[in-house]
Length: 209
Length: 209
DNA sequence: ACCTGAACACCGTTCAAGT
DNA sequence: ACCTGAACACCGTTCAAGT
Image 1 (cartoon, chains in turn red, yellow, purple, green):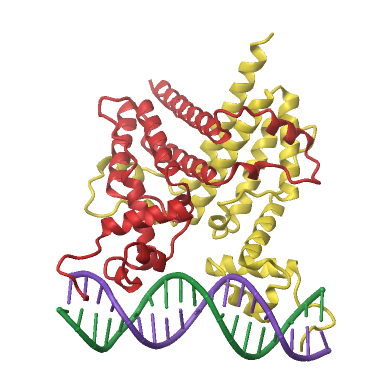
Image 2 (image 1 turned 90 degrees about the vertical axis):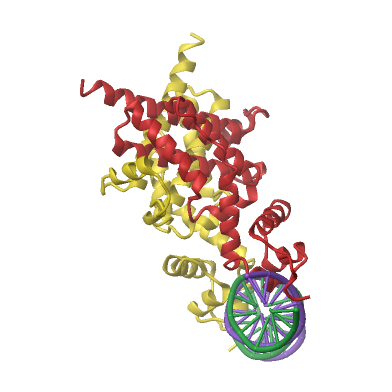
């Protein structure tokens, strides 16, 4: 049963199984992943560089689900906005993966291509080049932080008993059920950050003329 | 040598050792933590609820380093701003701890007290109560995302060779060395988010009158 | 090249034994 | 109550053996 004619494993299948496992159980181990693929644990090491290699597969898999594709005729604002929303949607579909991806950014070809187009759009619109990375980084940081909020249970925002937090409790109680606190915060943050970018653009195009 | 008259361990010492270990090596294991404290691994379990208990110690330790203390005479804006900056400063001092704290928010008494005062200030200034949590959540998400950016090496933002990302590379090259990309993004994000809060306040106070 | 079975180091956790 | 030593289950990784 060693070395079948057609390989039992490939990166595609490993990535899918790992993603399913994390979605279902919140984490993965190499043995559990192998079991799900009907294979010995050691077999995984013929395809992937250990556990971190599997995490890397998850990273690129999530990256490939970020479908932004800003058309070149689009203006920077809706392009950036839809990019941020699709970014978060990809994370939202797999909340438990997000904490595994926080140490390194997603730098798959698709994501980089998306950035490339966004940068080109911003540049063409008149954004000063040194400011572009500042704005993009702020956006990316916010999206990541907001995505992490999705994984946290809502109950976590409850004030533990015995602590005197009168006004905080009132603010918590005043929240509407729909849309979610996380969703409202995301909408607010994106809107405000994009407005900040627009202000920055307006300030620079007004100055030199 | 079992059960010395004065206890060898206490939560304070465990927390400090764990923090030092993470700061130096980027992670911690129960055996390594015990070794640093000159104690058997099993001894830790008399004080702390396993590994996750140690993480909890790190969480509250970081929380206690968030010195915001907005004075009641302060207005909401500088209060929120200094809160966000001290939040990030606490994270920045221990970059490797941040990824361990992403699954649950910091809810230590000091942090909650800080939130309580901030909420009270915002309420007094006229913020609609249902909007308070939205704004605070957006701020918190951004701060967390920005803190994670501190742990990532700067090189990570380099475009891998073989990928055609002309404009992105130009934007990367156009960045000033100082202040850091992470620092600039944080300043930009906080400024813009606070301005968003101010706009929100202005809109609501203008409406009903 | 790809899968298996066995092996190893290491980690988190438990628990009886000691004071 | 608090520390030790020993033990256990489990995980990540390696490697020779097989096709």
